[in-house]
Length: 244
Image (tube, rainbow, N blue to C red; front, side):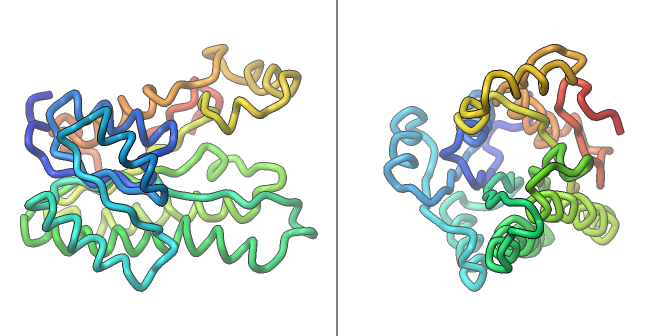
């Protein structure tokens, strides 16, 4: 996919397992990347691994500073062709035990901050008359999940928001799409009890957990010109666990 060479891409949540793989895949195909996350040591490790990338520490919970972050990132890159909104959090609990702050923190970071990242990235892309926005949702945003009313609401909201943005800016040559990962093998899923993991895998037609590279491959496709006529869609990457 040579059309990604020298394309300017922001990747948030770049220091996690999925974020690392997204950076690696886009780097492999020649993209000019700015990787963002909250841990500067992890960002520096990422830069040591991929020397040509740029890094910028940013916590997306700082909603009032999102526009500044997008401006600084665009200046660092020399433009903006694509943004991958991968950053997010979980604060799980059963609904009747979930505090208002747990609800608000997850909604504010996963949904409100992602909206603001979309908003200010799109403003930059309008000047270029083209762009790709890729928002990372989750399979549980479509199915629901025990103990995750806040998280599932935020991820479902990302899907609906992306559809509305696609309607608003599709004619401006800006594509806004989502990727909804299923259960992916990461440090988080490694902590799941083996018996529960077996139950999860038994419900996946492909018979395995996904890998972070599976998500990165989907990002690569949506970031490239191969997806130019795909807009307002959600690419489900879950081994058949959920069939929309």
